[in-house]
Length: 393
Image 1 (tube, rainbow, N blue to C red):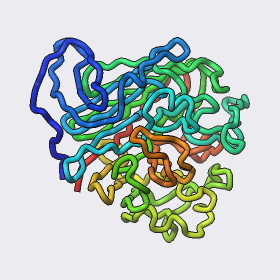
Image 2 (image 1 turned 60 degrees about the horizontal axis):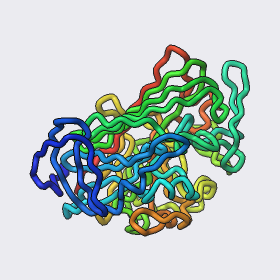
Image 3 (image 1 turned 135 degrees about the horizontal axis):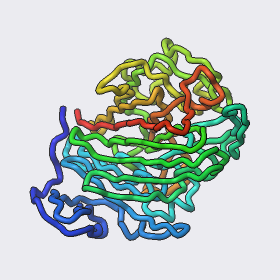
């Protein structure tokens, strides 16, 4: 069932430039001269003033994107999705991405990955070490002796150059210099976030380098399809279109195997509630404290992309379908959420109150020759696309 149009004032207006949100109201305006848009207002705790600052000489802002049905708030600090408003089955605009209410809370808070663009290399590299063209490189370990999500100060801590060409698109650029976090080569990265006509958040990634390097970009949005602050995600129904996953050791580093999900708690080929088997005594669930594993996508295709997963919020009726050109997806069930961060709604990031589906190449790929390669060389263009599409039931 398609999402119905909601929260529309039905007014097409012409504006000359960008105007800020009113406190506690969502008010869309155009970026470009003579750009016709539809204005829409709904309640939100997000205020642009809370994101209007300068970090290390670079301006930080909050940007709003919208189409007929969706509205999304993004900050160029970390290239992160701060909020995503989707109509539920009662036509209530529901914020399905958990996030924080100011730049300062992201900079100083204990959790730096909420909604962020992740790079250079998403997920884990064992002991932070890899060999590329005969030379060994070391990334400073930042997670139980391993390098996670690009090292100590990954892309989630960078201020990206931002350009908003229209009301539904934001283009982010960042140049990662040679040896940043230990990775070789100058890496020029472009990420385009857009809201599409078929009610999707589209993420298009591109990168070039002047030296052989590693690239594995993703987005780390934490979702709760019942809305931020609505409780756990354990009753969400999840279907993952993958018949294999990559098991891990105690440090959550892949063993190199690709194991069939059949007859295991990792089998989501048919829909299951996330919490249905999460506390089984499976060794893999014990290692992850729940689900924190990469799935090998099995070739269910649409428009040249893998259909990754379908998730339904049990209270809201909001359905999210995930698509990607990537070969894998990391499913994380919020096992390390510990109520340490106050969210924009005033609630906290309590245990298992959000999940992630991070489209990506496999963890620790450079140390497993049988995994799809994440090497990018000069003259090549890294390009990948992922989408989160929304509907209601």
